[in-house]
Each structure stands twice: as C-alpha cells, then as structure tokens.
Amino acid sequence: MIFASQKAGLPIDVKLAAHHLLSVLLGIRVLARINPDPACITDAIGIAIKSLGLPPLAFAMFTENH
Image 1 (cartoon, rainbow, N blue to C red):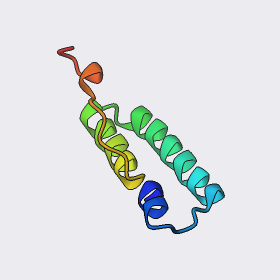
Image 2 (image 1 turned 90 degrees about the vertical axis):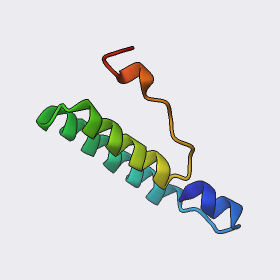
Image 3 (image 1 turned 30 degrees about the vertical axis):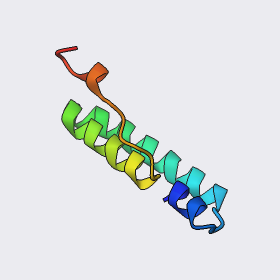
Image 4 (image 1 turned 30 degrees about the horizontal axis):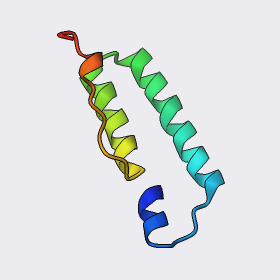
C-alpha cells in the first residue's frame, strides 16, 4: 500500500498510515491475549506486512521447532 503508492508517484498520508499501523498493532495484541494461537497471530502480521507492500518476513524464529 505505502510503497506501491510511492512507486506510482501518489502522495502518502503519513498520519493515516500511522493510524493504520497503530490499529494493526493493537489488534494483534488483543488477538494474542484472546486467542494465543501462533499461526493466527503470524497470519495477521503477514497480512499487515503485505498491506504495506513489503516482502514477507521469515517467521521461523517464532515457531516451536526453532
């Protein structure tokens, strides 16, 4: 979303982007308390990262086998 807008030359509303990231962070914190399923939380993080147009992160460090 943000980086895709930059590549297209569109202006980015920094305040809206900050509000979006804060909302995602708070949502993930609530999700972690209500349903501490690691797969569900990492999926939510992955969707937030994708919405920013960033490449996916390796979540190997968060798995039980690591």
